[in-house]
Image (cartoon, rainbow over all chains, first blue to last red; front, side):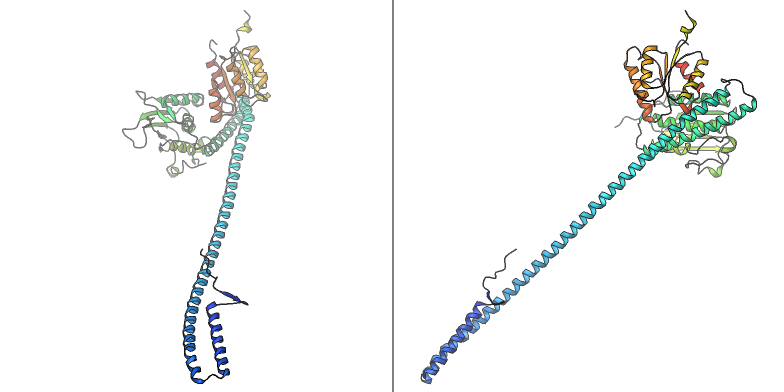
Amino acid sequence: METPQHVHLLELGHRTVNPLVFWGVITTVLSVVLVLIINTAGVQSGIYLLFLVPVMAYLAIMGFFIAYVSKLNRERNRLLADQVRAETTKTGEFQKLNQELEAYAKQLFDKDFELTLANKRLQNLEQAKSKFVSVTTHQLRTPLSAIKWTFHMLLQGNLGPTTSEQHTFIEKGYESTQRMIAIINDLLNVDYMEIDHADYNFLPVDLPALIESVLFEFTNQAESKKITLKFNKPPSAPPPVLADPIKVSMVLENLIDNAIKYTPRTGQVTVSVSDARMNSARGDLEVVVSDNGIGIPPAERDKIFHRFFRGSNATKVQTDGTGLGLFISRDIVEKHGGAVWFESAVGQGTQFHFTLPLHRLSS
Amino acid sequence: MENDSNKKTILIVEDDEFLRSLTAKRLEKENYRIEVAVDGENAISTVESVKPDLILLDLLLPGKDGFEVLKKIRLTESTKGIPVIIFSNLGQKEDIEKAKALGVDDFLIKANFTLDDVVGKIKKLIVGQ
């Protein structure tokens, strides 16, 4: 900022006076004093007039000049003062803006800090929840295993003979334990899915082989209901799918478990896999799990994939279930980029379909 | 040759007393010779001294856990070929993958299987039964 040129201003008391004005006043006073002296000295009036003319002219020119310069000076001072005032105002505004900016920055920092804290708290809470679920469920499974095995050994006659009435009660006990275990497993799966949804490990998977290994796990369950478990393998081995084998096993387990549960004794559950690229836009390989069980009532078909939903006719056949299996299954299939759908006729059976994409070499 | 020496030996590593006794009772019915261990250290020393034909291994054990026991078994020349079935109530993906990486033969979640199922799995893994 340019320094205003105050140097020409004289200070008189607390007033500033232009030096030219000052000088003009002094000159005029001196002239008047001179005239008075001459007059008093008694010089003749002619000489006095002749002497007065140049003095008056000098005074007039001086007066005009002094007034003009002083006006310019005043103007300049005014402009300078304006400039100074404007600069001061600007500086003030700038400082104010700067302060506001600093205040905003501080607020932003505080908010960011609060958010980070809140986020951390949420993460801790989420971790605590998962830990709680996982610990409780694992702790619950141990005593439940003991109860289940005991009931099962009693039922198998491994611990000596039981009367038929005792056998019926033990059977109820065994079924209740199974139900509780199923609930715990489903809760674990839901929790697992929620904390771990991003953690999919996609690999090339031989789908028919995976289906066979899952079906093998159900041999006992199917036999106990005299249900025929069939696998329709495709005539030639299909190319591998890109999937997380553990997650897809979960889907297969849910669908096959449902099919067996909701099919009466001596029924049939069939799993088939086919290349759907020719006739379906929904995916590459299509798996169908079909049963000739109780079917899904038409009014409930929209709700079947909802969390905790169970068909109104489900409890008549089998009380085991949480209504989480299909919810979990659909989530898994969709995270693979596939689709799940079904056809069902009450009293005749249900066919659940799902598709998975083929493993393609990345381009 | 004594009749008893033809019996296959199964080591049950389980810290819960009741589960251990139920498992032992069920497997004895299949005519197996049963050894038990209640913690990790105990399991490792028993494996080395007894050289069982199969190990049923829990994961949550006092002291050394089942993973450490499995690792030790697989790293020891004289025991590395022994079939090991993890039999635990842990069973999240990480646990299964960790056990697989350490060379486990099967992974069963206790609550999801009956002891009859376990017998079936054991028979598949012990040859010459």
